[in-house]
Amino acid sequence: MIAAGEVIERPASVVKELVENSIDAGATEISVEIQGGGVELIRVADNGVGIPYDEVELAFQRFATSKLSVAEDLEAIATLGFRGEALPSIASVSQVTMVTRHADADSGARLEVLESQVKAKTPEGASPGTIITVQQLFRNVPARRKFLRSPGSESTRVQTLVTRYALAYPEIRFQLMAGRSRFASPGTGDLLEAVAAVYSLEVAQAMLEIDTLDEGDESGPQVTGVVGAPTVDRANRNYISLFVNRRWVQSRALNVAVEQAYHGFLKERRFPMAALNISMPFEDVDVNAHPAKSEVRFRSQDQVFSAVQHAVRQTLTAHTPVPEMRRAQVTAGGFSSAPARTATSFWPVQPFSRAAEAAGPTNGEVVAGISGNGPLYDGPLSPKSALPVLRVLGQVQSTYIAAEGPDGMYLIDQHAAHERVVFEKIQADAAAGAPEVQMLMEPATLELDARQQELLLDNQASFAALGLLVEPFGGDVFLIRGVPSILAEADPASALVDVLDEMSEGGDPETWQERAAYSIACHSAIRAGKVLTHQEMVELTRQLEACNQPHSCPHGRPTMIHLSATHLDREFGR
Ligand code: ADP
Ligand code: MG
Image (cartoon, rainbow, N blue to C red):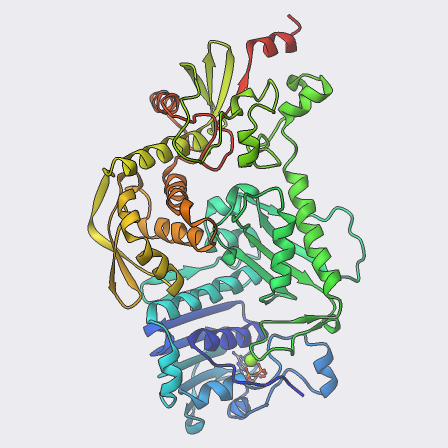
């Protein structure tokens, strides 16, 4: 009755099955260790319920499961596992050692299985829980081994998997040791803390909690979790994690639902971050559709699709109000009476498209600063759009520089402004054939997947023009020997991966160098929230004044807002 099949394709599939077993066993701590990309060794230890001494061998028998009692249970599966297939499949292609102690027992058992044959079983003192060690994976299936990628990229898959489960189960403390990489989630039950562990504190702070104001139908799918504010967009879809009843699922349709909810919030070819769980009655979802249980079927796909889209859209609109400056114009009420705004509320709801930029000043007086003069990205830069000399007054919210000009006041977004400065500099250096390169004392290594490698090799010369010196090292490994000096402070490997991710989303091949340049600029630009000295603000403002296109960042967002003297006078009733 089960959609059985070969579930063990690679080390990450072993880790997936073992971690799911630990979760089903009620563990609150799960630690995963791998060596040699998981081919040499995989060890998963948990503090779950364990297995009684007499039943240890049974766990390795095909189709033996403790999770279903009658066939009808298949109609409403509440556990991650249900086929009794994983342990026997793993044990048939490796050497497995299980040490387990049931919560109610005084001591535990140790079982050794080699290619499905039980070799030894002995009592063993152990703390409650289960430790499974899988060695020499595919020792007897050379064909399967040949299919594997390098240890580094197998290891990356394992890391991705463990971090997804850390997002799905914030109350479980996960640990991962993979070669020199370490990952740990706090297990506090707080999703944002898990997000901070998986990505970064900065990302966690930019996450919006799903709030569905009108709760709607309680019996239908309920969407919870977090989505990224439009400011933390990414170059591909890998940062969208979807769970159905806390099972990590791959679903094109649901990805699309999330992406569509961001329509108008993100630029083209940029993707959101999200960690969403859809909880729904077990009988409304069929998890028995796919051998790896990673694809599911819904009784009503449309209902789930619209629940996801609606929840995300509602959260985004609630958190990203229309810029108040413009609203003030429409209502003729002064912006001085507008309620306090968050650091991001000036960001336009509609990202400024090329077309809008080309159309010139359409945004009215108060935001006159963002009016473009000619297409932003195309061809030789247009004559300088005048930016008057500004006198820096101070910093607002560690994010904006307040300055005075001949005609009123300017608020400059420090990140956007710096992005613009860096972008123009590296473009100019590249055009002059003289990038400023910082050679690394010790070359940084990084592992790339096939697509990234292809992009890199096709464009190696142009990368060099930007100051990014990368060369193949053998296998999937590449060496970064030098980086644009502007990136000297950043992590070169992650900068390069981001550039390649962004490029791999396709698009107009002619603009790839610009896209790489944006990405470098974005990586090296100072962040919002960074306190700047007066001197630094003056310096940045000077550099911005010298730019060809000072009014917008390379992504088309405004670098500044201008409050004209006339406007100020009017607002104060002078
Ligand atoms: P399934 O998860 O589909 O039941 P598996 O082959 O993965 O099948 O596991 C077989 C059985 O072994 C499980 O049903 C469970 O009773 C037991 N088991 C496996 N791993 C653990 C674990 N970490 N802790 C406790 N019991 C486990
Ligand atoms: Mg299982």
